[in-house]
Amino acid sequence: MAKYNVYDCSIIELSKHHSDRKGNISVVQNCETVPFNVKRVYYLYDVPGGESRGAHAHKDLSALIIAVSGSFRVTLDDGIVKRSFILNRPYQGLYVKPGIWRDLDDFSSGAVCLVLASEVYQPEDYIRDYDVFLEYRKE
Ligand code: TYD
Image (tube, rainbow, N blue to C red):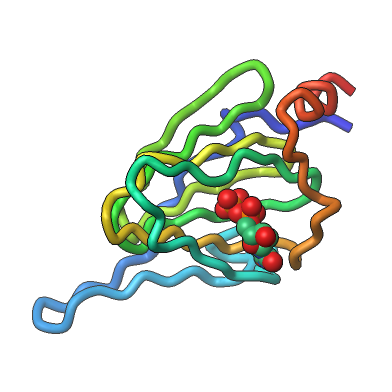
């Protein structure tokens, strides 16, 4: 099966409903804003400065990653090309397709990383060893 590369992953602009006096709302709708069914939502927070997260790929899972507060960097890697995105706008999401390694770092103080995932938590869907990932990409 053909595998996705980092250029298949991109920033999705979310709707932003602005009210001068009351602030903003951004919305993600199942199968509409994102082309998958959201089965799980989780978020990273209180990440100490200098720490990194991620360091894995998924075989089948797609994700939309949103900096709902603060900022951080996401580096995507398809085994050949790496692409970094600074996420710092709550009305943008990074759509990450299956089979892509991701590293998250440079978390600002108070950053919250919201992840909408296409699958429930399945440890067997993870590739956490980079050499295994490179082999998987060659298959
Ligand atoms: P992990 O995937 O290593 O976090 P990250 O990739 O963001 O650094 O997950 C950290 C811990 O949380 C690990 O023990 C597994 C657990 N976990 C769940 O139990 N369910 C989940 O949906 C997620 C994302 C993690």
